[in-house]
Length: 254
Image (cartoon, rainbow, N blue to C red; front, side, top):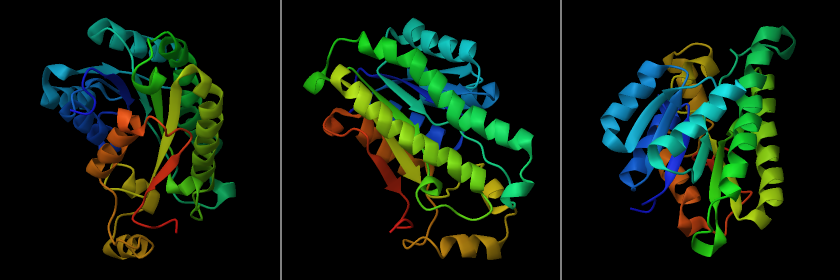
């Protein structure tokens, strides 16, 4: 029960890595707001987790939705301790000059603007918390990617958005450390999530084999992998860790 008494908000919690993070957090004692653009997906995850989770439809690129999401955590569970900015999108593999402006704007809105909106809304609430173990008042966990560390061709603007998340994580970590707020990130390799097909362009045994050949441990990441890593980084055991963008990648970035 490493997160006993903690309250978390997880964006993109209705599927993939977000669902895995929600499940792990609840298993370790946390209360969770499962936030997703797809309310039915969020409701399905929350129903499986019981009274410790509540679903909420949220467009993370809309400031009013983001504020309502954090209000929901305080209304249902009385406080906010952990913000997980997990929601993300990509574009289909293509030469950089052929990715349409609408696709670029969607990536910028969900992968970058949403992190800005959520942190601007959450940080004053976290600053107001009483300090806990080792003076920590709250934690923000951003979902970056190995794409921001070791970019793949034909995913240029997705790669760039995740590089932005890594830099934002480090910059915010330095600024917020004096207030007892830790900011960390995870860099997963491609995983068994709804985005996998989009990364690959099409899902064939040949393309899967080519992807897997770049991962030394020989498998894709899973929602459970990211849930386990996230649980450590947001917990009191990691109270001396901030600004870290930890690879969960089977060795891909070595």
